[in-house]
Length: 431
Ligand code: SPV
Ligand code: MG
Image (cartoon, rainbow, N blue to C red; front, side, top):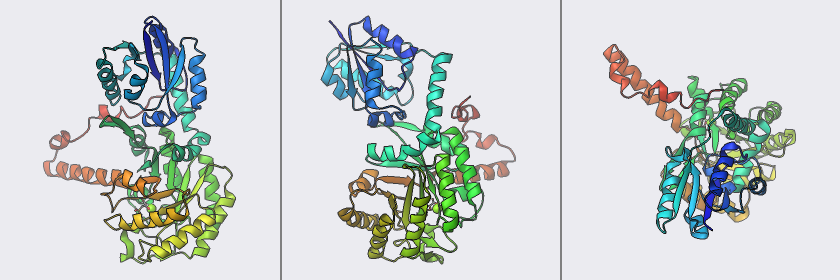
């Protein structure tokens, strides 16, 4: 009897999936695959149920002989393992990044004469509703909040990109690329104080207050599902910080990063060019402890950001602070640098990891941007934040458009450089 293979990347079986399985049964004995959690994440589908539950869900259809786990998005290994006569899939993967998976399947099947069967994908009101319900579940605070901790367990490196509005949130949420046979996307969003302030035309000096930051978070949350790491500046007064922790938790924010500075905060990228004062270890530990005591859920994270390297205080000071902050209850450490080479970051991470193999390390490679995620990972880094690149690309593009319109007294000359509105609105979901 012929062997048919169909892989599923879903938490819910709907009539479209059943249709594929019924079709598959016409060709032979059906083995279904479920994507592992790690692979599902790369596909932009964050699992809401466990792998065991997904396996059971497919077994219960009564339409498969066996369910196996597919550990990678690409089919190379699973096809070697199963040697199916047929692979069956919906025809919804013919365009976009998923077409790379289709190509991979065809290439692997061609090696021994296996065949690909494509079933026309079921798009109806019911299927759309199920998809929408899933997205809404992922956006709920109780789900979104814990997603960062889950990601830290699943991914070698959690990649976050800056978002400061609904639109930038959508870019962070939906950008998926195929490159060198892999699908890639951002895992989380960084709500940068610098970019949130810049978007409002204000300096990054804690002038944009928490009420306004919360408004931005809410705009982003309305249209996304990915976890949010908030740049909490200095955390402000301890008496205010504890209230803000509860608010952020309630909203579904996953983590806040607070930096060990005091007084009028200036952006770290100015380094010692401007007057900046580091807080004492004692005071900052008290702030961390107060925050952890105020926290009401297990999942929320308070991450302590160390400014010693920014302020030229040296490695020893950075490490002393790191261990003290972890002892005070910090769920992670962010080490920052404004050097162009990552050497001082590597030195810090290596020394920290000698004594602490568990606490997540966060870095923001804005100045040391030659370094790759894999290199950072090899020094024990867990979260990489691309903190301001969206703002820095949008600002000059908008400014040059304004200049061209002024020069030409019309918009014709700039039009070819602009994205058609029809394309922009493909980002935006209907309800
Ligand atoms: C931010 O993005 O606001 C940050 C990171 O705090 S940095 O600008 O590098 O200080
Ligand atoms: Mg900031």
